[in-house]
Image (cartoon, rainbow, N blue to C red; front, side, top):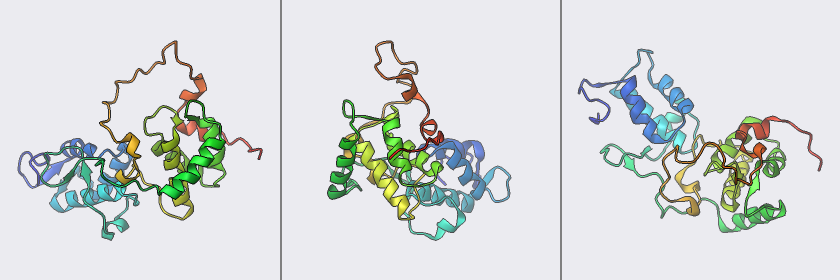
Length: 233
C-alpha cells in the first residue's frame, strides 16, 4: 500500500482515506461511489489490499471508457491516472501534451463542416443549436447528456470547434456500440484544451451585467436534452 492511503500501515484502507485518494482520479462522485460499492465486497467500509487493487482497476476502466463492472476487471487497461505525481504506485499526469488526439484529421474536417453549417456565433455553438444534431443520432437521452457533459470541456454551456468534434466523435462511437466513457480519456482532450486547468471555483457563478449570453444558455446541460421537443427537419 502507498502510505498515502494506508497511513496506519495496517494493511487496510478506510473509506475516508480512500475517498480522498480516489478523488484524485478526476472521476465523478457517482462513478467513485459505484467503484467503492463493487470493491467493498462485505460492505464494512474498509478495503483490504486485494479489494483496494480492485478499486484501482475499476478506476482505470472508467478512465478508459469501459463500464464500471466486475466483468471489466479482466480487460487490458493502462494503469489508472491520478493527479498526485508523488504516488509511486501510479502513473502521474492527466493529459500529456504529446498524446496524439483521437480525432483523425479527415474526421475533423467532416465535423468542422457540420459545425460551420450550424451558424456558430463568435466560434461557439449554443446547446440549442447542438441539441438537434445530437437528437438526430437517435441515441438515448442519458447517453447524449453524457456526451454533452464530456464535450463541454470548459463548462461554459457552449461548444467551440474542437469541443464539437469531441461530441461528434463520442456520438459516432456510441452508434458503433462502443460505451461512452464516464470521464474524458486523455487522448480525446483537444490539444487546444491541454493546459493547466484552473482551480474550480475561480469562475464567477453569477454572470456579470456585461455578459451577452442569454439566461437560458446557463441551464444545466441535461436540461438542454430533457425537453423532448419534436424536431422539424
